[in-house]
Image 1: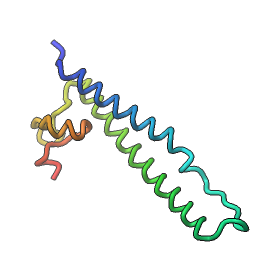
Image 2 (image 1 turned 180 degrees about the horizontal axis):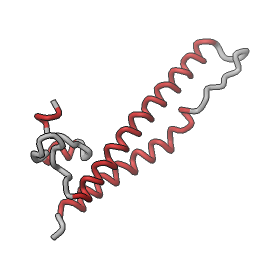
Image 3 (image 1 turned 60 degrees about the vertical axis):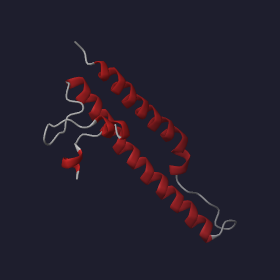
Length: 111
């Protein structure tokens, strides 16, 4: 008999993936190469633009890492191991999964 919570968690994980995709789609311009006309824009404006680009790239890297964690959680769900700690095989509390559905370790092993 299939786990009734499995569909709930699958939905939550897929929703998080869709959120990341939407954020990525909205932020692609911020990561593009900074091109400013130095004769019309000051050095500080260029530095601000470069800093903004670096922050957007770092945010994209964090989203990519989160995406990998969510995909791994979906794989654990399909294999029947979702909600179990990778280190001690103990149950990950539901409250922890509510906060981070991609959590793969219990609180004790994560700390």
